[in-house]
Length: 167
Image 1: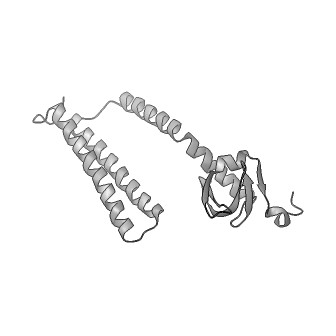
Image 2: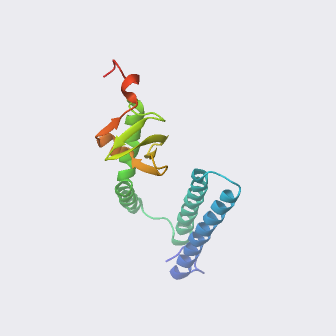
Image 3: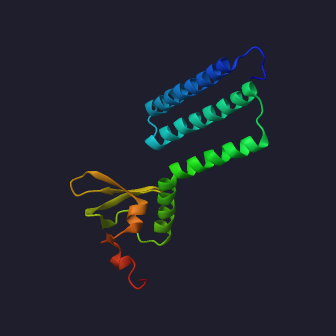
């Protein structure tokens, strides 16, 4: 039962679905426009994610307006389920981010170091919170997750002189 008597539950669902579809299409359009202007891929992703977050928030607002407020216990239950699902879905990403902080803190890895991990040898060309990019001898680029680097074994062929006396 909706709080607005002139809308049925089906119509309210259609409005929420329309908001979600329009938000998704707007995020794709905005990403395309930003990419056309020569922005970096990370900037394009950021714009698309921001549009999608706004779409989700607007959809939730529309839901509450059309369906009405929910009870406190229902809200707690839904938020617990959503939080659990998000935590499980992002478990690998969280592990990679924590590993990235540990790698940056212990100074074992820097740009331009030559490392070997899981049988792959390359020069570090980008260090991120989730992945590390290696340029291989043949010019290809490999992406290695930070949790893989931290789990090891990782051989840093460039850090010997830099870390001499520390370890």
